[in-house]
Length: 377
Figure 1: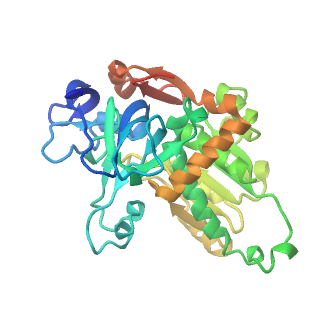
Figure 2: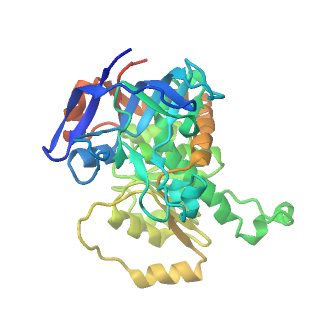
C-alpha cells in the first residue's frame, strides 16, 4: 500500500503553486468510508483565484492546501458498512461539510449549503484538502454514483449542481404563481417560458442545457460574436445565441419577449445589473457568479426597485449545493449525454497532467472546461 501520493497544492505562506509528491496517502479508517482513485479534476475560476492567493485556507496545521473541488473518481475499496457503492463505480464527491455547531439548523440536517454560521469547510477551498490528488477517502454520504457511460464527462457534474440547485429553487418560486396551483393548472394558458443565460462559460452552458430539458425557450447572451464556436455550440443544443456586439443588453426584451428568468453566470456586476432591468413581469433573476472587488458601479436603482415591486419580480443568489442537487445533476447529466453527446463532450476542451498545474492555474484562461487528469479516459 502506498504511503504517499502526488497532489497539486498551494502554499499560502510561500505563495507557491506546485505538485507535491509526498502527500500522505489516505486510508480507510471508518466503516462508512470509500477509497477513491481520482480520475479527473476540473479547473475553475475558484481554483485560479486560490492559486493567486485571493483566498483559500489549508487544513489546521497543514502548510499547504490541495486544490480541486470538481472531481470524478473510481472506487478502489469500501468500508464494511458502505451500501450502494462498490469497487469500480464512478463517483463524484460533494464539496461542503457542516459547521458542527449544534444550533445551526441547516448543518444539523446536513445541509451546509444553507449554513448560518459560515464556519463550514469545503474540500479544496477552505479547511479541507481537495481532490486534485491521486487518491481520496471520504464518507459514503458525500458521494454520488454515476453511470459508466458518463466516464468522459462525469467531471462536469459539480459545476452542473449550481444550475440544479437554482432550478430546484425556481420550482419553489414558480409555485407562487396562482395559475400554477394544482387546482388551476388545467385551466391555465400554456405559454412557453423564456430564459436568458448570461455568459457562455461552463456554468452558463450547463445551465442552458438544464433550462432546455425543462422546456424553457433559452437564449445565451455573451461577448463572443455570432458564428463563433461558442455560438455554434449553443445553437447545436437548440438554444439561441445573442452576441453583445449585435444585441445591446437593453434590447433583450425586444429579442426575447417577456423574460421569465435570467440565469447569471458571469460574475460581472455591471452586466448583471444592466440585464436585471430587462427582466419581465413575474420574472426571476438568479445570481450565481461572485464578482471580484473592483469598486462601485453605477446602476439605475430606482428603475430596478420599481420593476421589482410593480412587476412581481424576484431576485436571489445561490451557491454550493446539497445532495438533492447533486442527485438531480447526475440524472440530468445522463439526459444531456442522451440528447447531445457530442456537445456535452465538447465542453471539456483539454485534459492535462498534474505537472501542467502552473500554466492552467496561473496562465491565461482558455477554452471552456480544462481538466487535470490523473487517469485519462
